Image (tube, rainbow, N blue to C red; front, top):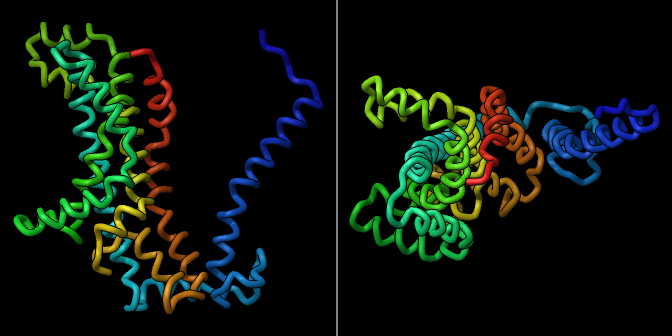
Length: 285
């Protein structure tokens, strides 16, 4: 039975809500302030900088020492392709585990879970040597290539996402596919024309989660990418705060603000699918 909150309870709830909002927004506001600070340093920075300017943003796109637009394009390309391939392969695998009963099905699901528990950082040396050797035979997937980096990301992304998507497919009645097959559709047509349109929320969730994880990855990309022109955004940002760029915090902040825009745009476009995609898959498999 619903009880109307008292005045004190309402005040406490709103107070907690505003504290949470301020706690979440303060780092973003501080970084935004640093990006307009012409002194290019965090020492003595104020929330509203003196003599604010957009010089850091202009230098990001004009200074040839750091190809910032190329880093953004590399990150969007690597993250977009990784998220797209992950969503496609995960949908095929999750559908098979959800709908078919075959020998080794349970073992396969457990194997995916166990592989996901293995920290990817521990495999970094092995992945480096693997791409180094493969590059000797197929240069397109060797070290310092985006194709090799995408393949490495795909290897670590399928386990958790397959489990997540399988739970969602389990909530879709089998009778829908059976009706389509009685009307003459093949199994693949039933999957692409009946199941996938109904599974758009979980497809959007998997795409967004994988895009963000790849877009923000630094460790793996910094090991496998060695050329400045091949850097992703997370790797390129390091140049602003190391070596001769030690004091370039203003440009680092400006690059962070501009670099966050692709993720904000994707959230804006797919926000309607997120809630149902995250909740409907939470059923017992």
